[in-house]
Length: 160
Image (cartoon, rainbow, N blue to C red):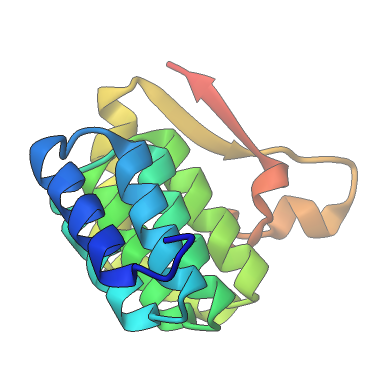
């Protein structure tokens, strides 16, 4: 890569991820190289191939951050939904909720109960034997707030 042998570098990375598909660092470095070369579509394809292997949370989050760097909010939302379906845990839900709060899509968030990831949240929470409750302070507005309208910093996860 240093001497502009881009195609050779691509072949090496492609071979590496083919032989060792569970090594997340290889996928990350490969997509990073494509992004640095300005091949955004190629980097996106690499991330998609990586997601087919159901990587850990960090892999999904790096893909979502990649899309957000290029202002692809809808793609990032789709990635977070797939992330939650792949890892149906409370921590995945919280990451998804933080993303929605950060994007300021409160109206979208309130409609999330119709989306598959939000419907399966209750099941995931039951499996982990925990629940999400709002942290209420003396403010009356907080008492009347909808849980989905609260920021994730105002949520408390308790074990049942």
